[in-house]
Image (cartoon, rainbow, N blue to C red; front, side):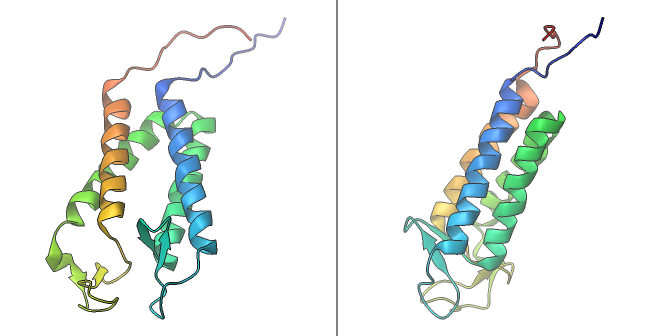
Length: 148
């Protein structure tokens, strides 16, 4: 007799998959959203400023989330994702981390000299980071499995 075990759809697994799909979709939209000007900035839904480095970072994040959901690493993904995105959201509020000034219209420059980030991005990063930290650190996954 062969014993089959199934991986349950826990809160961590569902969240990792949802975050993976959301960030992969945002990255795909970022690749196909036309540039607003010669600096390479796109505005997804007119809310999120992205450019090539930002879009690639979202794609990597999204693919890691999807992979984590199917490899049993969803809790670890949610913890790491949450910490990184909360830090990104908070650090993005510090004007001194944007340089060179005036790189895009009236903004203060590129975040860490690499990518464009605006208020919509800060809100997205903080909300998703907080949700991921709460689920990753404070919700316990069930340890029981049902035979499939």
